Length: 228
Length: 241
Picture (cartoon, rainbow over the protein chains, first blue to last red):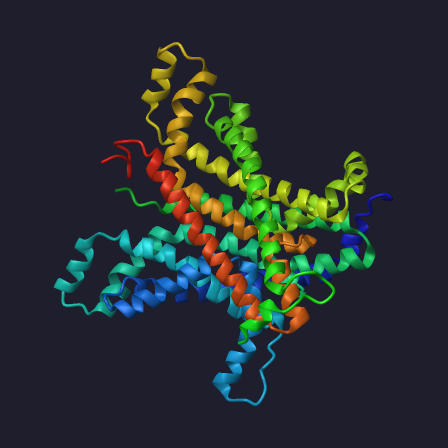
C-alpha cells in the first residue's frame, strides 16, 4: 500500500457526479412512482373485494420477504420478456440494466410505500369516512378529498425516511454494472487501483447527504405534527 | 421450466445444482447467525448507553447509530473489505494469513453485525424509554446500582417489548446477507447467479432462490411469534390473557 492519493477524486469528479446524478434521478422517480403505486396497492389491500385484497397482500408480502438484490436481478431478466409479450415483438426487448432499474425500484418500493400508506389510511378515524359518505361523496371522492390528503400529511415524515433508505438501496444496481454513484466509484477504483481513497470518499459523501436529509426530516416532523 | 436441472451434476464440482444452492443457504444462515450475535451484543450496549444520564455516553451512542444508518450497506461492505485493511497495517497482516473464503466470511459477519447493531440499538433504546419512569426509580429505591437496575429491572422488560421489531430485524439481516455477494461470499444469492450463468436457466435458479427466501421468512416469523408468546409480559400489549 503506497501513499494515499486523494487527487484521484478531483481528476474523476465529473464522472462521479454523473453517477450521483443517476442515483438521484432513480431515487426521485422511484419515490414518486412507488408512492402512486403504493397508494393504489394500499387501497387494494383494504378493499372489500377479497380477490383484489389477497392479490395485493400477496404481492407486498412476496416483495418484502426476498432480498432487494434478487428483485433487481428478477426484473432485469423478466422486463424484456414481459415487454415482448405486451408489444408482441419478435424478440425480447432489451432495455439495459440502467433503464430496467426504474421499473424495478418503482415496483419494489410500491410494496414498502403500500404498508406506510395503509397505516396512514387506517390512522384516519372512522368518523371521517362516515362523514364523507354522509355528505354524499362517492368512494373515489371521499378517498381523494378527505382520507388520502390527511393520510399523506400524517405519513409524510415516514415516506421521506423511506425515500432516504431508497436512496441508499439504489447503490445495489452497481452490481448489475450500472454507473450509479457507487458503480462509478467501483469502476474508477479498479481502473486506477485507488480502492481505499474511492470507497472512503463514497462513504463520506453518502453519510453527509443522508445525515443532512434525515436531520431535515426530523425538523419537518416537528413542524407538521398535528397536535391532537 | 424444467425442474430436472436441479438434479443435474455441477460441471467440475461434486454434487448437483440443488446441493450447490443448499450449500449457499448454509453460508447465508451461518453468516446471519454469527452477525446476529454480534449485533445483539453491540446493539444492546449502545442502546443502553443512549438511555443513561451521562451526556457523553448518549452522544457517542447517537453518533454510532447515525454512522451506520447513513451509509449504504454495499459501501459499508467495501469499507470493511478494502479500506480497513488498506488503512490499518495490523489488519492487513492478519488478513493475508486468511484464505479468501475466510476473509469474506469474517468481513460479512463483522459488517452485517455492526450494520444491524445500529438498528438494534435504536429498538433497545425505544424499548427502555417506553417503560414508565417508576420502574427505574423502583430499582434505585431498592438499593440496586445503575448496572443492576438495567440487568434485573429495565432490560428484561425492554427485550420482551421489542420482540416484534426485532423479528423484522432478523429477517432484514437474512435478506441483507445477499449483499455479501458483492465481496464474493458464496452465499445463496451468489450460488443462484452462478447457476443461472452456467446453465442459462435463470428462471429456475431465481425461482428456487425466491422460494427458499420466502420459506426462511415464514419460518423466522413463526419462530419469533412462538418466542413472543412464551415470554409475553402479562398486562402488556399482546401479553397474558
